[in-house]
Length: 312
Image (cartoon, rainbow, N blue to C red; front, side, top):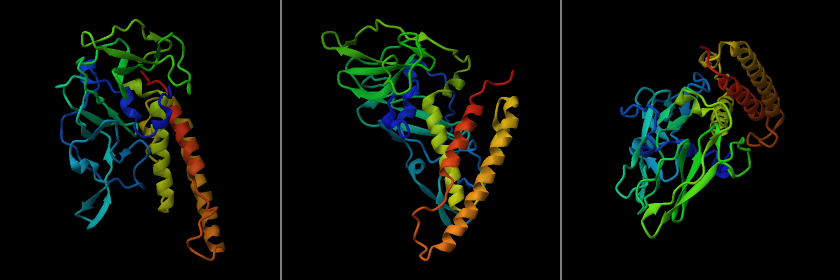
């Protein structure tokens, strides 16, 4: 499901978002955003979404939500602004875009910080068209990609155009499709195909995050938190990670992962200390030991545990 691989790590979260016109089911509170300063030493990879997410054709409605730092009245310092589970940010479409594709359609959507460590939006901004609101297609959602004279859709996770598994790196050939806005009647052409199920489809809409797009986002966010903690000389922020897993059978394996990454941190710190003692200049960093590879391995394995079905 790695469609639009080039933007996978930056903008593509909006691809899976269902616009209001497509009857999104995600429940996002309308309360104002609460900005929280997260300390890397205390937050596990599942505790914080980090900085505000970014989506194609949209930007945070409130300027404060987009600020990289915030003045902390207690410490009297400017600190990074991050968001925790349950926090919600309202996004506004850029001029010429709406969440349903119509000229005068709604132009805002909410993105909620989930307990998986990343934002999940309940809409996406698409280019407004004279053909009006984009049509509803079973088991498919509209994407934010601009296609001249048309709108692009993608089959939902677990579905494809031919009923076969979507191949990673396959450019979405059996997953993406477009509908043209017809000049003669200002209506979208009829979709003649069908998004067919090829695998297990979770009953709970919230579990649709289990796909390659969100896996990549999770790994990048998780790895970034671990690398940042190491850079500050802190312990890996993983103590509470296992308690957030929905599958109790995965707890033992998770404990092993936590023990391994802590050991990796200790080894890397020792190597870093030796490295600095050997270097004459403090600014010489070539070949400096770190935990990037270990962090990536930990996060990929942690995702595999997060992805396991819930206990019932």
